[in-house]
Length: 538
Image (cartoon, rainbow, N blue to C red; front, top):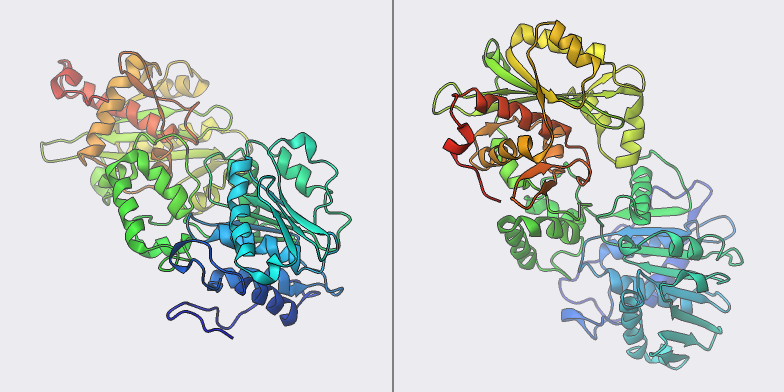
């Protein structure tokens, strides 16, 4: 048998996935059969083009798990494989190899293997790789007919075929699917195609396999994010589905995306199909251009990001990640911004401590509240670690499923015992009983409009101060998460304001901080402060 190329890695000491049931077992003969078939194919691209398709360790693990783990009847345990991984890791070639194995070597009479994607052109990418693999494998060419125009490969020996489907869902009913390769699931405009191809289409087959492969996307209302969330729930033990095989190579929001060591978490082929220098180049482009940051995170680090460019780039916000000595703030003057929650929002209070002398910086101290009973739902719905933040003390919870404003009122009164809160700015359209109660308690509550007129000057000033590193926030994880969610509206006069409607997730803390900053600045002196300081032009 031919030897691997020098330095080409191989999986050592294979261990079946922990998702293998006690009633299932690992059949090395079945696994070896799949591995051997694939490794007799040839690479079609890059430096290995025309050479044996030796599986990389992460690829071989998947193949052995999928084809080697079987139930007591010898049928595959896993029906659906969800593989989420960064670009250029060799996912198209792996998907093509799986499609060909299902067509030629799965012992399935009249195999029907389908390739699909959001559009025919995308689905053709995997097909074209499979097409080339067949042409470079004489043993397969002898038993095949390739119809390139219609994107179809026929296997005469089992009367089976591999067919690329168009995106129109109406013609897909009635298929008898033995294998499906669904590429770039994140690009699916809705769930119709997925449902048609996976719900009941393989019922006549002993062991159909749905091989779903994708990079992370941007739409958290999509079928792909639903599958991603299911995969993460399975990986963390929150859900159980013995037929679903989850693989997610990517960074989370808690991972430092600037650390090269973390890049390998999203790119198991780094150093093989991807060169580190190329990733470094894209990383530096992302640092220089905030518009490229999301692209880099999504495609190279396999992170779910917003399709909208964030208003506050991470590297700008992190300039203020310095420790705060809370004891030194006691008794100091400060101004508050209070963003009261509507249904589903977080109630946020931010205290802003203005500098007392020229070399001091603003200090931002945030507090957050949610109803306790809603935390599990919030975690499941958005995959945001509300539960972790609550345990860590960065997020407070009031009893029940609605915010208890009496609790918040009592908390703010206690804050006044520590800090000299001169004013609290609050949305004038959200005149709840809490505002009246705080007024009765002696607080100066300042109505604050949420339109361009009121919000634009302090929003621009907030960004300017962040950019200059003049706001210290101590790295509060809730506030940091919110800073990355901010999207702004702008009018014809280039006025800007944060918009909750367009922001992908919660921004309540940032809105509260901007209102608090406005009160700080307006009390620095009585002249036109914003004019004197000069506004950042966007």
